[in-house]
Length: 146
Image (cartoon, rainbow, N blue to C red; front, side):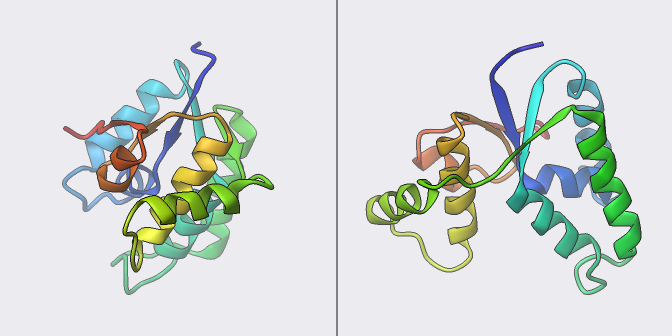
């Protein structure tokens, strides 16, 4: 197993969950194949975003119950395949530096904060289907769906 962690963005987790998505099989296969081979990380922000979206019937035609999501997240934690990262005491400072360097507006703040969290946890690579902010910040971006 590689020692350096790679962050998995929420969109990959969502595609793997959403059986109606065009990307479902690719995302699911990617995660299942890479879980045992790599040191994959997810942040507390990813967990919160995932929970918010999959329990919302306005976002998912087949939203799942809070209990089902809690069970799924619990399994992620129990397996040990995902390293869980959190913002550090310096993440707000890192975010402010990012905001000073890039014209970030609106919901892009969430990706900027995720990037700041990754940077402060020593992660320089992210698996995502949405590369724009992460590339601008110098993170290595890998789109496992292409």
